[in-house]
Image (cartoon, rainbow, N blue to C red):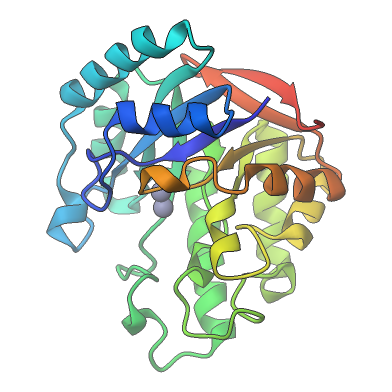
Length: 270
Ligand SMILES: [Zn+2]
Ligand SMILES: [Zn+2]
């Protein structure tokens, strides 16, 4: 069983493939299920990121793909990658509550109003300060965002950071106390922690890496989702098997998929 639970279609401003193209790529990669998780990032400073996606059009493509691929053994789910933005949470809840989603992936692309994608986020700060600020913002999000299923790319601060690949990933030692509170909260709430394999493109580590996954298991965490974060059809399913192996070696045994927000665990073992 392999399920890719972080995928972007052309309904995200930074991605190209249609839902049908994603499904074709998923089938070719031998996946059993996919979940399309286009962005909503209300009030992101970049207008193209803040623009609200055309959800009815996305849902139309999802329904067509479900029919086309059901007989071919591919499940097609619909989710959203929610860019949390604390001052606008009521607005975000209103958007989400009106949509028939299978899956809510809680993400964070803004720390103190800046996206760590931007070099400006790191200007004039040490790595320790830049990463600690990110973890604190992520902790605030986990403690206060009211209703979600899995936590996206814990370690996003390192994805585009201006450091060599060996030192770029967020590690547990960067913010052990805050990360422990965050991971314990996920575990107690029964939330899934995403293993985002896009990190393997530039570094030796998924996002998050083995040390944080290990700590999640030690603190009682049980469930993960696997996600390629593909923005192109050729990246669908990218190194998910390797992500599952990292989870297993960290002591995590259960992946999870979602249907109408209901979690359905599956074993990560092959
Ligand atoms: Zn993201
Ligand atoms: Zn994404």
